Image (cartoon, rainbow, N blue to C red; front, side, top):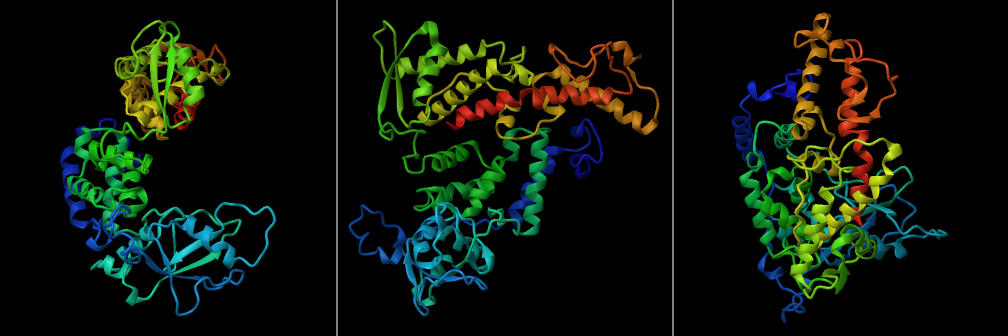
Length: 502
């Protein structure tokens, strides 16, 4: 299995060789045996909220005692915490906020036009810390690695143990930004997780549900229901964030949705629908025409895509206003996008996927993909539904994943099958050095040229009169693959992402 996944053993039909569902079941069992991703509960004495009358009385109970000193060898920065003392900090202070607080006191060098970005690298126990972490998250990781018993709250909030020592040094021009990747997690868990991810990325053999690890999924749900875990991402133990970002398929759709809402809108109510009716800054009513639906949609998005507002639509010369017309507006926009032949491949039965375009002709559809990205982002933000069916391969491109010929087969079955057959012919030729035969004929008999099938305007650098033969078949496979899921659709995907991020 590993040989096939790593491309060392080029087997077309993996499912015919290995029982993937059984393999996944065993891998989940092994992961549940080895993993040590803990649910961290909030102790009762720290569960007060700012609205609670006892909150102020117990404020100091929830603060952390921190000692901030320069790292060994750092001579250009002064000591912040005096020897024998500690400083009280909110546990959910991020290292970015910490830097802003201590920088004027520790920096003895005046710098003109001082950059407001990261100036310090922080360490706990000699390990560099993720600049985006809160103190709580960083210390959770430290004790998680260091203590099998994991009596975390006794260590985090017990002033009798002294302050937590955090050291810092000045960041240099050649310092790479550190991101916590948990590369030092238990070897068994790491290997299993990577193995499951490779199987998942191949897109073969199993339903989505088969990749969900029920043990981890229940743990994450329990963690998000905890008082601190349900407030914002900076309250979550970092290993859950790492698992969700690196291995999202391990978790159920419901928990992925809840996590996404928390991460994207953590300062708003995310426990119910994506957007609570009172969570928007304001509501804007817009008048649109049924006859110019995409033009009006572009006008609305150009004005309001970046604003956190609720859009309410009213159609020209019609009385309705509010949720009904607004939902109909998004439905009409969805239908219009699906009619745009210049945007999509001809077969849309398995979902929409961009048709290949040369860089010289991308501009005529780029604005439409930007608009589509804006619309998709806005409906996610406001909790609406968009009646538009993207192919799984398009989602993978949006997420920055590289596609293979197997992915082509998912949205263009005939083309994908033929390319896989051609690929197998090339492999056999390398092994036997014999002439290539395709269905009792030669490759030349197919009369193929270096043009993308179905898209005659998309040609390669080869001369028009060059025919595909046994010598250049591998080049032809690479050309068609790149045009179909690579450079031929890159501009469209980038335009969608640009609009979505707005």
